Amino acid sequence: MTADLFKILAVCLIAAIICIILKPKPEYSIFTAVAAVVCIAVLLLKNIALPISQIIDKLSEHSINTEYFKVALKAVGIGYVTAFAADACRDSGQTMLANCAELAGKCAIFILSLPLVFSLLETAIGFVK
Image (cartoon, rainbow, N blue to C red; front, side, top):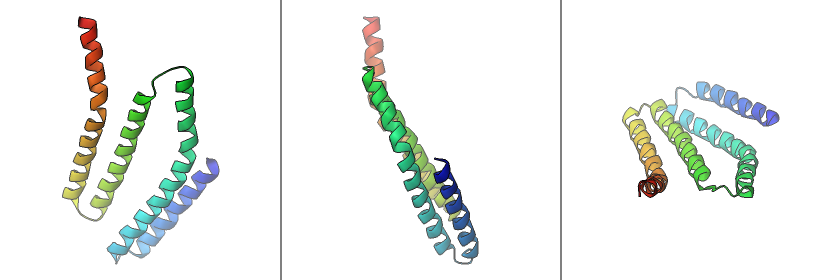
């Protein structure tokens, strides 16, 4: 991961320099930033896929339900993607769109967590009876 960290930091710095150079043309600057983020996301996903699969395998080995972990992982992913979209909107001067992106992300996480809430409610009702 250390070598990839340096690659990621290099992509960040190079993209930042290009964005500064392209500052008079903000439409090109934002596309440069988005392209850099896509490259960084690919590097990160490549590095994080193995540890996540190892965690899921360990949970499965001990007969622990992996659904809760998967939901939490999806929620974290939604949070990161939402933050990226909102920041990109803010950088381009669209605060209202950024707020809408954040609201959409919060709603998506809420909807994603509903099965967990229902499961907890069923468990609680089972204890009461």
